Image (tube, rainbow, N blue to C red; front, side):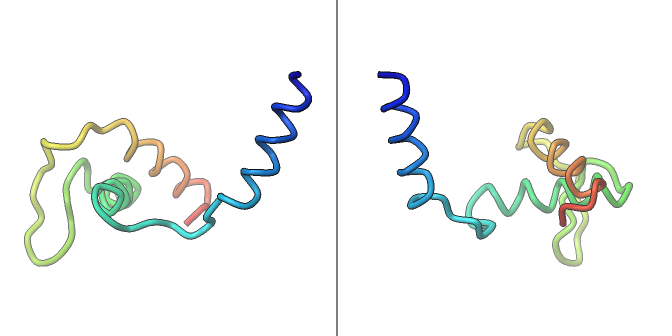
Length: 74
């Protein structure tokens, strides 16, 4: 039963997975927050002329994104 479930998961995953980065909604904010952390600017939203400290989104996911950026996965 486990083998059938695993096979089904892998088969469906291959057809469903989208390798493009989705920059819509909150994903855009998380990406730019991670980019600012990587650049050493801190936890700020830096998109446009105004740089403002961020206090709406939690810092966990942008921090993980910044680690990936530091390791070269831009």
